[in-house]
Amino acid sequence: MNTRIEWRVQGRAQWAGCLGFVICPMIGSGFFPAPALADNPIRNQVLQIEAPGFVWSELQELKLFEVPVYLRRFAVAAPVDVAARILAGNTRLFQETQASRQKIILSGARADSHWVAEIAATQDGAQGSVSALSLRLGHLNKALSRRSKLLASWVPQPAQLRFSEMSVVDGQALRQQIYLVARPLDELNAQLREHLQALGWRDVSADERPPAGRVWRLNRERLVLVSAATAGASTLFVQHFQ
Image (cartoon, rainbow, N blue to C red):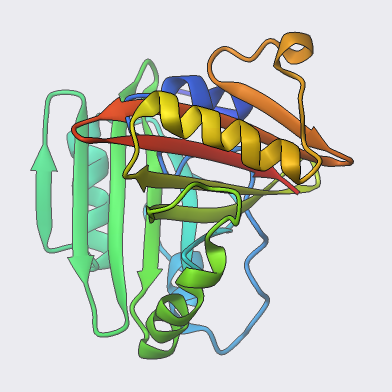
């Protein structure tokens, strides 16, 4: 059987599908290229995974709060359970399993990294990804020190930054963030408009007609903002094309 590779990447359309407070951090239309460091053992481990019959994508790097996550996608002409056994048996990276009829998640930890493999059924077999999150103290300390610097100045306070990742889409840097803002939804939206207009941003939602939320532009920069009410507060989803 021929393996047909379909990397089901959401791209820009992922935003509409993530309104249920889920931005799939491992799914995006592009990531920063992984640095070419020969002495990076985590990166090398991801590159050197051996799994017979698997067809692999190129290595990608996602940064979560500036902590590197190395990721490779795969497709294989085998059922989900068989693909999971091949990965677990050949890599010895995974110690735990979560399974449903159509999907299996493998996870495991080492001294310097945390590993996850997601395997889902397709018409021709299975596909998914293997990712490794660095747990090196230097990376984690850097993430803590830089977290406050990632806060957008125009987000109404008090706000907590719950998620932040950087990627590249069509050659343009994209930062995606999620904030929990301790304000009612109407008040949050009104203050967002006030703050952005004061900084020179223009609301171009009428022209761009986003599937949800508002679109703002300032020169080459573009903001897509989606807000939703939560218990006693509001959640703000941000896409900032820089």
